Image (cartoon, rainbow, N blue to C red; front, side, top):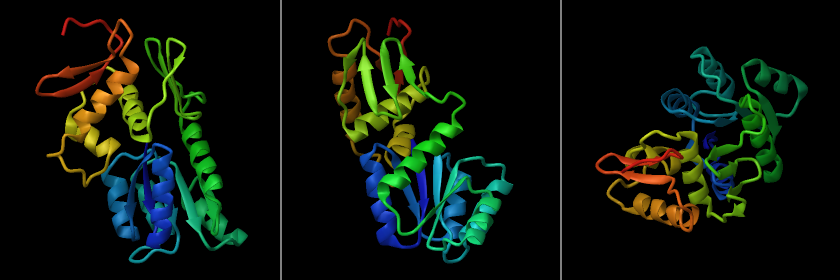
Length: 227
């Protein structure tokens, strides 16, 4: 899943980014309200963490403008202002939740997970292809009852494949959603990670789930293919 963090304190932004990436989320950052608004309107995110006291454009205005464009991405407002009227103002601007600084990362993570579950109509949100099952909440992956251990990046890659099951995903598409916008497209990292993921989810099973589409990219599908 892809999360946008809009926070002008770079140490705080880096702390949040690192913690979320360790939980297999793909994270992008913006350090002022205008850049945050631009990214939120341009890209598709699963959640947005938004500070209130931002340069160029505050979080309240940023949230309002995002909502005016009919973007319903869950927004967690993050701020040092903890008075009741501040929370009401933030929620009334379109935010879904409000967390006051200083905070424990575990609480932020729990609130993000709650927002992501709330967004999904299916509260379990379990992703599946054939006998392969991935649970985004517990971060567990199994195939035919056998537990598979993945690194954070492998988990993010598999989750994106499953959320786009049956669709051909180009290397550029995988770079944007599983890595970040500054990813070096000349690198072979994507091919290396796909190979590692195949070894873990396909090796020892009769039906391979991930296939290479020559000249196009990769596809994960549980349907039989002659390719």
